[in-house]
Image (cartoon, rainbow, N blue to C red):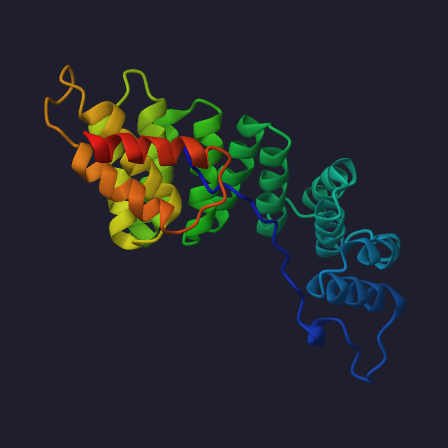
Length: 259
């Protein structure tokens, strides 16, 4: 099953006008924060750690400074340091939505989906109109085995914007994880993802897989979906995907063509 579940932490940059005194002189704490923010924007995450650490020393009650220090450590691969910084940001400001989102992403990456789901739940309460928050929440809930909640989160994201193939794909996977499995609902979700974006590889492959191995089975539907599956497999392969099982997929296509 293909998921495209990369989780990217985000930063919220402070307006310069909030940090620069009227005289045009930036004091050391805000200057260190601005320097670190710029390095993050430039993708220089390791270099951003030192000035942002300085910013947290000089501005210990500035939640954004801690969040950005977490962001720099997170993207530099320092998960433990990032965790401490994000939690400190939330100690300073429990309502800092960006830190909630970033901490949720980090928790997903270190395989703590239940804790991640709690952070994304808090984020969606604070930012209910941000669709990516609902999508990340759904993925975390799904991986935590909270399938009813994951379905609701997917539907909340789709209510904001139904033209999101990633959300449809996630909803389809949720239906496959359920007991009993909802094959028809999964297929409809994957196919909806393809309808929103014809070259969206995860939904293409998943629609092919479900229609081929599940919906075509006589014990389930009795309807031969193999022609549809073949069409979707070919469309998937036409995208030149970088997947480990490419040879296996090509053999499946060759077998379907020979039938």
